[in-house]
Length: 485
Ligand code: SAH
Ligand code: SF4
Ligand code: F3S
Image (cartoon, rainbow, N blue to C red; front, side, top):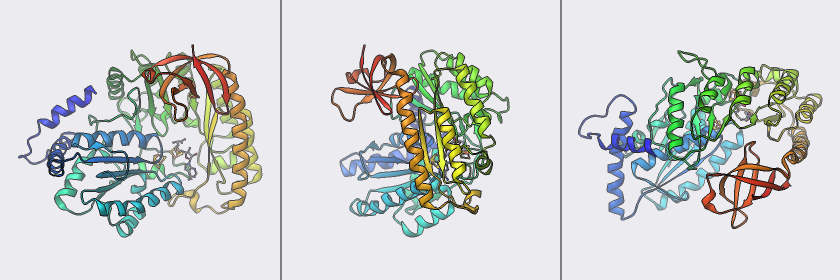
């Protein structure tokens, strides 16, 4: 990648006889050079390369952060390993629901045994869970073999933290409460050569009453539009045809910039980038979705006709308790406006079942919205109390068996509707971005339609990263089987 070549030159230019520079990103270039010296020496002694492995939990934000972390590790001199038997193992954690945490503890327990057999092994933890003081305390007490702990605000410092671990020979913990810094110009190792997430903003100011994200990701900060455009242009010249613009609430993008820019305006600018074929974005909060944005989506040539529009609940009373700032009727009216402007738009959503105080009646309101909107797909979650959020302290927590029953009914409804909605495209020929070889069928590929539906079709791996026309022959629940035409 061209950007990485520039960074490489900066790293090579570092003079390690001088103290580390104070300003970023130079400081990290310095530590990368220093770390590289350690890693190169050690791998010479061992007669093999040192390997690294990152396990990512959680959302697209974390996935993108992991690409940056891997970029740094590779600059330092690690080569990518395949599993937790690697020399540097990093878990990028999520804490949005309790079971996200449990998964991390489960896997961490098993790492200790592996580490005992490999004296070179370093274990690092980062991400949203680490922003919770009680988690860090528990790890320091019960998982003493962890070498490095850092949070969501300082991932760009990985090289520095590894150097500190090597120099100080003891565990390094570096958690920031927040930041107004956005450090650009660091290396990135993308998972897919042809598509990429692009952060347009960080943090969240919405404080939905059930959600821990604002506490662990900090206040909302938008990147400058010029930096975003420059990054996407560099990605396109490196072979990227699809970008996903990332933020917890992209619709409020740009409001806090010195020169405010709306998300719709950003989208129009990104749409003009030559060579880019598909633009997606996540996530849209219904309360901030403007008519300007609907018009921008309608008029753009490359913005996909897919919108992820989390509902959370169909009950106006529960929505108020959730601090979502819209009613059932406002949500439905918004969907009507979207469909009027963009008739073929695919809508997907997130729904929480069993929020405190949710009655059977309230739950039926959710089912009612699901039946009216007819989503292409929906992520359904059982409410999970998160320490420190207002909802966790609410009375009227719903009993587990009642929640489970509602969850099953909701899931059945969502799946049945999705399997009907998909038929809209059956028998048509559609452009498909070929994304990977099929897991199940040799000689087949898996790709996605503009509206995000998955398609399997016979094809050569050389097609991966290109957009091909595929006839959608057979619908199987939520995906298609097809063939190239
Ligand atoms: N910023 C995005 C979503 C972030 S979290 C948005 O506002 O839509 C992704 C999803 O996890 C949320 O949409 C919500 O449905 C779910 N979620 C968040 N906190 C939860 C909790 N405490 N219990 C269950 N689901 C939760
Ligand atoms: Fe959480 Fe609400 Fe922010 Fe989404 S908008 S991250 S649900 S607080
Ligand atoms: Fe999880 Fe953090 Fe994303 S809590 S959902 S990884 S922002």
